Image (cartoon, rainbow over all chains, first blue to last red; front, side):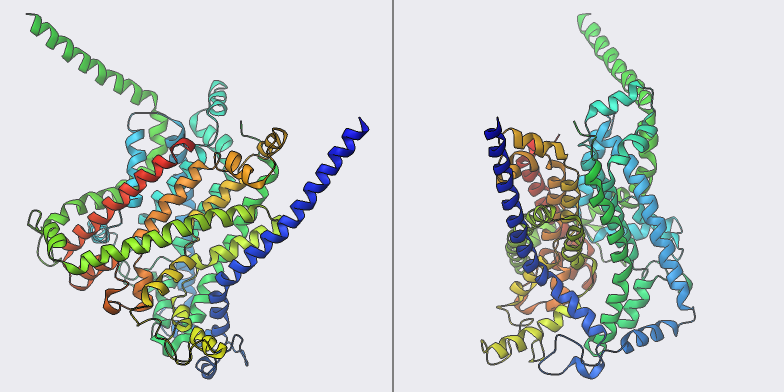
Length: 292
Length: 313
């Protein structure tokens, strides 16, 4: 008996050792790939704090000799020289992004649950239309979308930036794929207990879909944050940050520093959301008890 | 007489079917209610524009005058006399075959490796790999590959003594496709990668424990017998995303090596469609190009879902 136990212990020690060694090996591989991924972004940040004269010296340096915030100052100056105060663009961007993200998550989750777990007349067709919509990338669509929007008198209204982004086929597809992994028996059991579909969706299914939902939030936020208002909205007071930032930075390499500052500035909110959401994804591991 | 009776039965069963359909629609009222908000926006802003755009490929449409029906002539021109289109097919295929599978495997392997790390490192590495998809940093790549000695890559290689004079990475026909592929790979850890990360996080811990009891020892066995079978839906999602991003690539090339690229070396089908659509305003022709691309992507999607079929519900 004791012999068996020591045997087991030794085996598990060995496994633990291998696990530890394995983690280091994995870490090294990830670090190398990570450096390649990180380098351009690192350079972007560095160039955004380099003074102009340092941008074009040879050999180019991997750090800023005299770091400065001039590029950011220039960017903000360019942006606030318009008729509308800078805070207005921030407000526009935030309201568009939040509305799109919230509505997209709610609508996509509900529809995804029904499409993944219920058979009803039309469900199969809708499922295949979603995939077709994902694959159909024609540049003619934008024109047609524009025609539809102008028929609905949406052009030059803030709604033009919000409404088209709400029903994202990608968001629905992501949620549908993930929800399809929940065993039918759980849903059947809830039905027997007398719960309606709406309640099943929000009280049983969605609490277990945190990883997918958080991922959807990341996608939705990022896409909405970068919506260009250029051709849809012409009034200055409805424009969003990406459009104004692009305008401020669009003068080629001469203004490379400002362009970098703009890229860094626009990157901060999505990264914050990413960190918050990703932490939720990782915490899910601890209590995922609802699988068969 | 018998014939009439048979017809009657046929009619009745048709009516019966219709009645059944109505009943089942009524039974599933809740389903329709829950799907309605999504479908409303989806139909108005996606389905209607797609349906409106379908017939465009058979017309001559310059956006100023109303479309004129021209039958199949767009398609015959494409395949019989548009040499640049034939070339763009080759570029797209090379591009898709190189970036697609590589970045798909990369997405999967990196997501899997990250899953083995302690929680804090998980967040950091996921961020590092996903960050390129969030950032809009073509300008920095332009500076890295810049053709003068100030370019990061050139100055690095000169200092190492590998090259003597700067290489025109972005304009030399020999390099433009390679440079585009590198940058495409760099931004390719996107939606698919994150979805896979989420999928890994959702695999039930007890599965691993059960597997350990049943004699699964190595990580590779774990991958094949537990991880892949429980990741089918996410793998399909990542595959669709990968198809879309590698077949429709064009923006990377356009913002990096210019438009048109030297000798059309990085001229993809999507770039060709952009050329006709937004530069020459021949929308009908551009729509035909996109239609061919869609058919290629559709077939590719069917093949992959067949390959992954046993892991899907």
